[in-house]
Length: 376
Ligand code: ADP
Image (cartoon, rainbow, N blue to C red):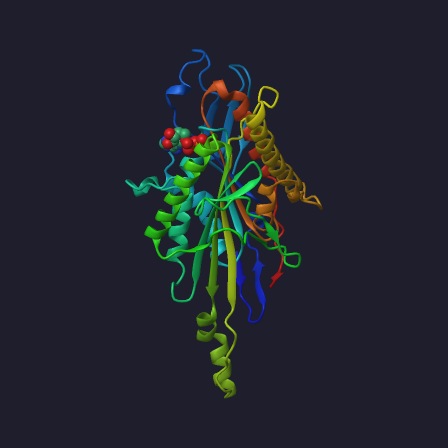
């Protein structure tokens, strides 16, 4: 798609070449087999069969019946982290660099590779780096540290409370929404300007350690919370403007040098490692576990409702039902780009969870983000 930045306050307009580009893109990734996937029933071990060349996935209920589903991208267990990043997150990162908000989310049962896909740092082996590191790397490489700024917040959402993973003493951070612009912000959260890739890795590592420590203290597991990396990108487009149209025009007119206001382009990327999507048994849980179950079910259910409403092009997207969807509000739908990666394991033991993850992804496939002019 082509975007042009006009002088003044109009941020961007899109002449959309690809009518499909506004839809939420949905990829599925199959985790390699591990020891726990092995024989449950010798006759029926795997319930998933992939046809990556057709972007199709076959889900077998038993040896006699199967259903086939189409996705935007189907990654086998041997797909590299690089390939997954390039197909799933890079298009969103590119639109962030052009001034749009966007979201990349991983959804799936615990143990299927969400954190591997999204949060892996790959300290010993850069080829293992996940989406968060690669996105920051790309953004740093495509911005100019003299004019632009890249800053991150790293949060955890647990029991409907926003916690700061870069400053663990900050909990219950309020989500603020600008009534005029609809812009969502977290003024209570740390916002750290990134210097370079090493600095980004350091921050991600601090966040990961704090996530682990916070959850140990709360006596829960990381898979029970949502981790959210927010990357704020602010770019000054003044240089570019001066180099083309305006300087030429003023030269032709014999004008005094123009002191045009720099155009500041602001955008925001959210990378979300969602809590495990497995059904948590509310009836069997008590106390703390019951609270967890209720809140995870609430946020994932409300995310599902928003996805359904977007898919049906409904007039009302119910983002107010949970903190998760309130946080996503301005990065989800509208002019924002969204990619969802659903992660699954191969084992027939988890057929019903795998089926429910696939259905979640199928509903998201229908979303079309209507692209419209946006003014600042
Ligand atoms: P989740 O975040 O969904 O609970 P994890 O990302 O922790 O799952 O993955 C579970 C285990 O499987 C981890 O040991 C992880 O390293 C491994 N794993 C997941 N996906 C892959 C993959 N594509 N390639 C290699 N190992 C993987």
